[in-house]
Length: 456
Image (cartoon, rainbow, N blue to C red; front, top):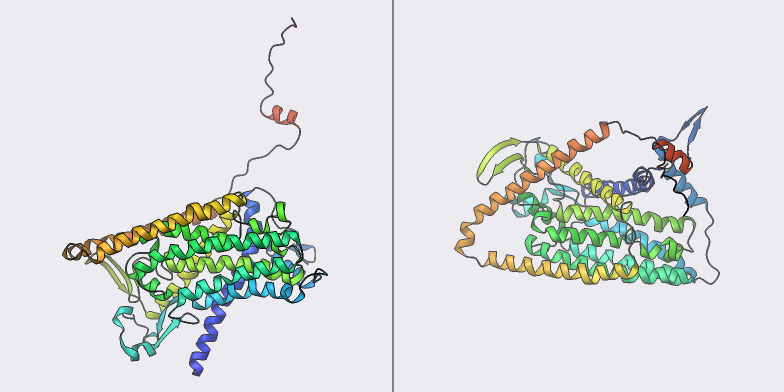
């Protein structure tokens, strides 16, 4: 490995791990702050830094720092009859795979070192050929593996081991019950996750995550070609992270805290932080496979090209460095939006009953994923063997793909405008009367009085 390659590797690791750690920390704050806003209650407001008589709270952000200090200073309790080695190993097995997962997730298009210094637009990626061309490209992924998606599933399955060991080694019946729930739940929904992506693999024709993104950039996003798979994969990801409405392994009202009931201090902090880090990595995967990764509608390596079929409406060249920066910001922006969506789901839906959770996985999501494979296979074979009729309709499919790009551009623009207007608008708060029922009735205009009838 050359010095240049080593420097680039360190930079890519710093970008991905830094983003993962910081966003996971902010999510711990938003879970409480956003949940308080949705439930119209007071959020985190106690931690502060005193500057004279002024108390700095920063909208409750100091609670995240206070939690970190608390994890390091609390007693590291271990049950007397616990398996000491496995009890200490379980948080590591739950924590490390989440960070190793980001190694194969691409966060931007490949950088052409011969073009970036010239400050000009780069050619399309499919126009670059040969070993000499590939040697000048720097992939914006820590480890560009040819088996990227298989690596993802191999590491995702390690979370089951950590939860199972934590429950068994704790010498606690609630922990053991939580571990059994976690194992059965994660195995069930990983089957759905794997089958859901079979249809996407048929369309993309590769298991490399960066090639999936490039296919979506040149054609249509995966949410259009595999709409059912997108929602199935999203539901399975939430179940894998064991958050409401799928938080049965750690249900406080039933199992105290599930498989990490006996954990405290930084060992509990590792379980706690791994859950939020898993939200970030799952959002990255969803963005990469179904939401176009670093791509935006009509933006390619050579700049902005608005075209419908063979008709080019607008073309504007953009320097290669500018396109790379736009792609990186796009990828991380999409990831943040999906993290917010998962937090929104967490504070919107009630918890499933455990039998309902398992029925949903095996009797609804699994058959739906199999049906998606069947439909995708039928359509794919029909297009592959359609002969001249399909070839003559290829231009129509190209136009349809461009129309989906236009729809995506319109939706994204509308969402940005809606978000800006929502943040700028001053919220209206209605006064709530707190008191007895007599005060409520008086404020409503008085209680209705029926005429008194004489007793008969």
